Image 1: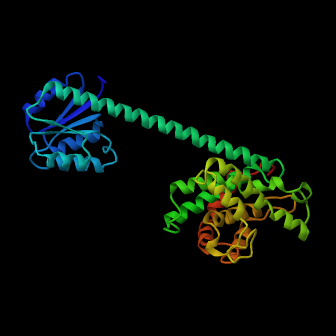
Image 2: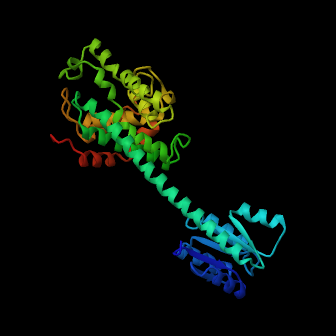
Image 3: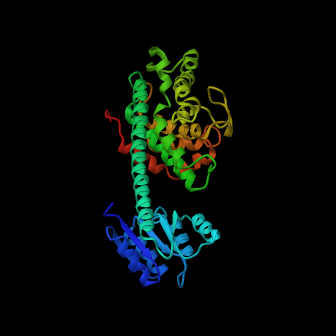
Length: 352
């Protein structure tokens, strides 16, 4: 606590002198007006600010308001210094974000106790924030490991590779971020939902673990009956993820994974599967995944087909605009398809 920094903002030198001597064990910084106080606060990031209310120029209320509006200083606790005794002045300060009041003339023991208590409270909050941040990172890592582990089950039985999973999740993030930046689907997209889509994308084909080998690994064209069985991987995937969700809750990080697994083969015109959803009946994450999955499937070598060129793949997606694919998302892809090509080149399959 001895290393804590305290900024005292008061236009009266005598008050600064008194408070400086009372709080001798801390690192003390001083300002004689509000503007100077704000500059010092931004430069040194003090652990606590003692702020006089009545000052020439901008008063303490305005200083407090500006500090609380600034991202760099909004978390610094502020104790007002005042000779006022009206409840209204105390209420106004607390509403602006102050944590406490010290009245003049100063009571030395009371000043020291209030400063000490508020510094301890700030340390507790800082430590708690660090702990929460650490736990959040651990949770995110656990989620990613869980998804990777589940996705690896599908990899062991499918001709698709881990690189396919990395590529498609990066395609998903690019499309989602561009939609957000262009103001499209802003009711469904934000940084958190995009991150969840990115993490969940590798599970889009998890249901293939339920498809028989003679169908999943067939080198030639599937018969009609075989294709009907292959379609069921969307259902198997949804059911498997739903079981996990029943334990974690519907708002878990797997919520997007279930929608992606179930709907990434639906088509904008309603001709897809498994439900024949049409247009915006298809969840946004499924529509985004559809383009990501088709692009990567076409440019990649499969047991049943050679790899297509990037240009041929782009033209195929162009032809599917408004029929297979959401036209807004497809347009974004067509405008910036070179970024997809860069990702495909960066995360090549080991056999290439």
